[in-house]
Length: 275
Ligand SMILES: [Zn+2]
Image (cartoon, rainbow, N blue to C red; front, top):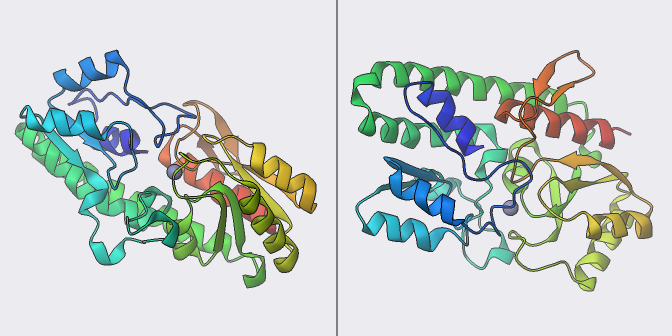
């Protein structure tokens, strides 16, 4: 998601390299020797932050100490707009990209960083940043309208891990995850029982797997509760670039883009939860 944002502003003026591809879990991702070489040669290193990239933080800190320009974009989100789910022990939830309005706040630090390394393109970068802002706003407005099709009592979103809190807040969903906010610990029996009870109590029709997290727990819950698997959502990674999907309204989008990721998620959730 961040590579997509940076690329949209950088265009062809700056070479952008994303280290984590489709299906990659950022909580568990360990930097390779090649990544370390790329990072040490980069003019700027941009990452999400808020403890998302748990196994890369040491390397980022080390790079910053060596004088590299290292920026955690999501840490520019004002503290009063961050969520602190109880299971994350006082730390803010890092999954800010699942709310386009919040993600739009990360445009500014990216613009600022790119302008620092290529000041001659400031006007161009600024105009791209402006377009991106309105793109995210348009996506949000579309999302609100699409989700409006769901009656309030159908807005229960059950997924593998706790990535959808900001999404839930923005679009009025009750969000329940089998695993905590990070995928470091696996789902236990108590987690599975808790989710099955909720499915029965709230009569939830569909639950969802995620592209970057093992589907085992959700599959088991589906079998034991009778709720169907409503599809696969993009939580912490996007799809393979060039994979196109067309929704029931006739809009085609690329699953390897931020826009496509968001439209796919919203369409999948609404289609599966409609009574
Ligand atoms: Zn996550």
